[in-house]
Image 1: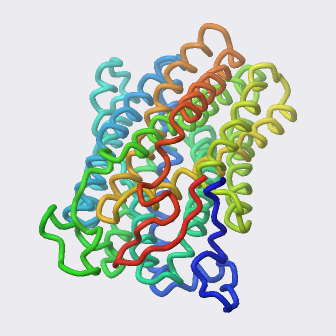
Image 2 (image 1 turned 120 degrees about the vertical axis):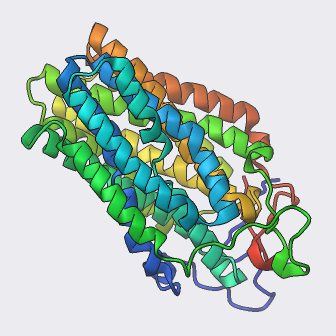
Length: 445
């Protein structure tokens, strides 16, 4: 028997009319939502500009996609290693306490990376600057998701909006990936090779400080284990390790595949644009790819799903692997744009389903850390893909670089199929604890 539960009717008392399915309008009317959404959007925008900005600057100064990819990879690995620690610190001490020093360090590190690259510094010096650049990337996306969980967890009625919030955040993320790469490419090719990274550092500093100033919607600081407040209000607020949850470990491995798509597409599309003698088309092609992701995210939030997030995650990954399998064989701009759009359409369902599973698998006091494990895994997958695709593009051309997304998604899909049983919440697989002592039905299969 399937574990699927329709979250739009489950839990309604017998004989009553089920509540209307939650939608984006109801979500955005949540009290206090706009106070963190607007600055959060500004603060996360630079994240989509960083990798492509590094690739374009370092390739310009070194003449090698391989070198550019390795520097970008060091940044991604550094982010992947430090992001979960930043999330854990945010759960423990509050988001503002982590965010303010982080954005200041990031601005300084990006400036150092730009200066070293333009000065023709050796590759090892760029690596040194890339480490703090990646480590200090503000984890605004996970912080916004944690704020949604906090403001929606006070009642069963609001908790029904959590899947819609996950879809909305995926759309917001992908909207930044529509704008960010296009903006960074335009600045690097039309103004100066360093202009994309300069804009990234400035936007990170300004947006991060604005977001940090929104204290009222900041999630409560997690208590130490054994000191949670008595009664239902304290339930789920004790500090635990997100990585101790088996499902989080599985999702982190699975999200490496999504990162391989982002990284492989960025480098390979750049190399393809250079091969055809039209560097400016790179931003357009990546924007089309990201637009597919954004459109799918909008659809995911608008559909009343009958299947659970685990099944949607598997279906999304099957489609993503099949779509990525044809990238290496395409050699025209229209065909590559169309296939890139298709690849993007399958990313959003996988991302949204993974983040939705976190709500059911992880206690409230560890969700920021859990979200950062997933974003860190995407960054790590992206870092590896950027490096490998850069080397392949240097040696064999752009077509070889497009093999990386295929291999990454295929390996992640195999992992997901083998370990899918670990993505079921412990509480009978049908009910997941929410903050403030409430429990709401969720679909898990």
